[in-house]
Length: 416
Ligand code: NAD
Image (cartoon, rainbow, N blue to C red; front, side, top):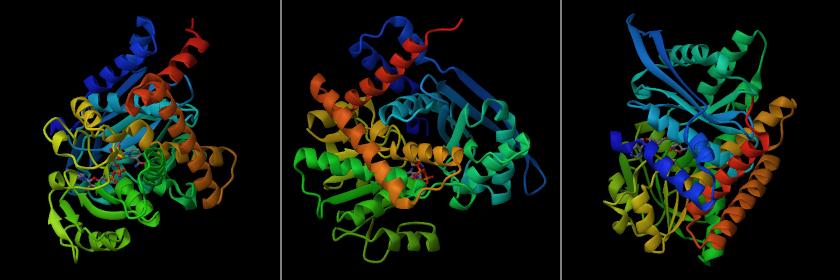
């Protein structure tokens, strides 16, 4: 289990590399290497069977020099403080890369969400938010969905925050259902953004997109919407997977048909006309584009030499370990790093926050067109820097993100 977590050591190594290239002084490096605040709470709830459940809740707020803290809430068994800190750090760089006025945070509760009833999840979410309430708010820290949390979870978060405040505060969480102030297009945004990056990278590399084959690990919010966006762009989705295993069909699948099958059977496996495969086999398939959209540390030194994709777009956070990163670069596989590839989610979260603050609701076409503009600019900024440095895209992205945050901190100065 532990090796599936994003290591804080990896995030710190990445920061060190960027700090060295940017010639940041040691004080700045030290400031950026530590979160501003880490909160640990014991989330105690009444379970459906009458017993008391005690769960560990975490919220880490990394840096807010460019705006309020922003980041997802994840429900996962074995969630660690180090993992959440690393993810909060990535959020800080990601918000800076896509140039939205937020800092980085992450949080979660150590639970197996699949084993809990909806009522238990609601009590758990509301109790957790009440415990960290004083550190949240539309100008302090704004939660969003992540693994095993969704629009319903965000509705409970927004409602709990509003009840404690005494008035309705829709801008206190993003990724909410549309009927209570969510943005059109937020659900699809991360997956859509991944495919925007794939399109840009294919254009840069002279790769033909029509019928290009795509394999996607993970069929949750991000994986499904990436599959749908790829399918709509004329790419051929040849494989998808979830925690139970994967399916492969060289002629291509229709993602919405696979989703209907998963909703009926709780698994993507045994889908008509497809061959069942393991998650490991999916990663090693011959394909044009590989999209890891589930867990951390999926491409490692153990399987990097077996990756046959021409391009890897990191929809998940931290799916590639640093040694695998190096191996893919040496194999000339184009890797679009997580802090760029999956930044579509936080971008539309920003749009949702702006819509809530101004009490507006933008049409889907406006949201999608603004998303494309933001992602294209971020992609080009990263590529430009990587070219100047003669580096891979991850180094370019880190330099862009870390550099912007360090500049904001320098400009603000230290008080008192
Ligand atoms: P989700 O809970 O909706 O889906 C997760 C998917 O991963 C599910 O299909 C699940 O079955 C699958 N999975 C779980 N364990 C697996 C395993 N061992 N092997 C293969 N698949 C497995 O989560 P999500 O919101 O889609 O998030 C996926 C990734 O994207 C995470 O790394 C998350 O941090 C990142 N991300 C999400 C967002 C967002 O807007 N939701 C934004 C940026 C990044």
